[in-house]
Every structure is written in structure tokens, then in C-alpha cells.
Amino acid sequence: MLAKKFILASQSPRRRELLKFLDIEFVVKPSDVEEVIDVRLSFEEVVMDLAKQKAEYIADKYPDHTILGFDTLVIHNGMALGKPNNRQEAFDMLQSLSGETHTVLTGCALVCCNEVVTFYDQADVTFNQMTADEINEYLDTGEPFDKAGSYGIQGYGARYINKVNGDYYSVMGVPLQKLYQTIRGLE
Image (cartoon, rainbow, N blue to C red):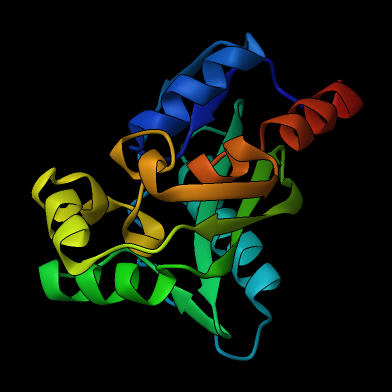
């Protein structure tokens, strides 16, 4: 099922950097799929479904490649927190995460030769308490605005993280260990 030529169906610089750890050659072709959550699906199914949609969008144009699609959601108190639309929304998300534990789900899809493999990984992240001033300082960095849950664990946001239970790289947007094992199993 696996073609040796890979395409990352994402414009995320973090995902691009993480894929380099797998020592595979790939090119980047961002997917233009509108991210709409199907409320009939569980959050785990949502991240796999969106990852699959992104990969399939690119796969039609590159049938001789293995397409990698990803999607990440932050789940807190039974609600999905995607990317914020504005500063107030980012502030509200961070305020709700302050001093709390939430779950990060990252779905992955590998599409090649009309076959699809999907999986997801999960990590629980605990934030320290954040003051309104700290949240505003963080928002001023500009970092939160293109990230699910309004934070980047690998950047300035790291200073607010108390604990991660699970794959750190899944929180960044690539379930690296599971992806590596999946690729090895398909070779």
C-alpha cells in the first residue's frame, strides 16, 4: 500500500519539522479542505475523519504518492477547542484551560493506491494557573492564533504547561511514534 514518495497535506511548519525525524522524503502540498466537525462522530472519529479528508483531497492529484493528513483537536470539559478566530476567543480558551487538564487528540491518515489507514493518538495536558496578564502577554507573542486550543507546547506556551501524559509530539500535531510504527508495518 505504501508508495515511497510522501506528501504532507498540511502547511503546518511544526508538522514539517516533525516529519523530518522519520527520515522520509516528502513534499508539502497543503490541503484546502474546510474543517467542519460532524457532530454525529466522537472526537476521536472527528480527528481521523478530518485527517482522511485532507489526505484524500491531495491523493486524487497524486495517485503514485503516499499522502499524510493530520488533524488536531483540544478537548476540554466535553467541548472541542479548535483554532481561535480572534484574540478574545483565544483569551477565553486559555482562561478555560488555566489550572486544568485537557485532552489533545491528533488524527492521522495515510492514503495511497485507493487505500486508507487512519489512527489517532491522545495526550493529556495540564496547565498551570495563568493570570489575565500572563494570558495577554502570551497572546502578544502571536503564537496562539494558528493552533488548536490557542497554545503551542513547543514555544512560549511551554512555560504554562505543568505536565503532559502521553506523546508530546501528538500535542504538536504528529503522533510520531504511532506514525513511525504504522509506516514500518506497511513497508
